[in-house]
Amino acid sequence: MAQTAVADSDTGPSLTELARRNGLTKAGRLPSLPEYTRHLWSYRHFIAAFANAKVGASLGSTKLGVVWQLLTPLINAGVYYVIFGVLINTKQNVDNFIAYLCAGVFIFGFTQTVVQAGSQSITANMALIRALHFPRASLPIAVTLVEVRNMVASIAVLIAIVLLTGEPITVEWLLLLPALLLQTLFNAGLALFTSRLISKVTDIRQLIPYILRIWMYGSAVLYPVTFFAERLHGWQLALVEANPLLIFIELVRHALMENVELAQPAGLLWIQAVIWTALVSFGGYVYFWRGEKGYGRG
View: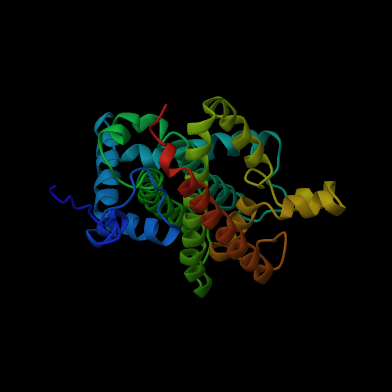
């Protein structure tokens, strides 16, 4: 009778080991955070190209193009100056209210546009997400880069306004760069957070304009920050003064303007800005990463 041989299942490497040796991973597996970060970094050229394409598309759809990047914040500042500075007379006790107002409008507008565009970065690109494989965090980060580019033009206009209204150039102007860097990282975290949140619960998108409007009124954009100390006390005042956008606006005003009254000492504002940036940027990134497998499904 012929002898039959049974293959020893213990001989040779396992399928898992063979997959590992050949660089294969489980389909649909959520990569670790460091692995995801490395993957995202490898797509940095894609992120830059996507951001440039969005800038080109937005400018190509209008006749004035890049001019609108400068006109929009100027028009907003002009309207707010007439309503709040002249009619409501919030410019009292502020030596240079025009520069004070423009700094608030431009800096708040930076975060506002990132949140508005970032919240739609997943839902508005579903066809791209379903067609190509890439780290989905590329989309909200690209949106942030687009608004950074727009903000550079806005800051140039803001500096011109500050100079034309009589503010001198001082060494403290150098603080503008780290303040804007912290705000950029903060904005990126917000874009990552809102993009995943809106992709899960799309109805929240309808609330974003109202949330941003309330946030603006609580950030001393349109009136002196001293208004809060005159009307609020205790935990209410502490809550308002801990507002991250109020902090970023205060830092920019402190950098560009002399004799501007701050809600808190400048050193404390910088500490709070760093804490807020670390919490929101890292927290938003982790929150987005946790949902990586679900984008484009359903």
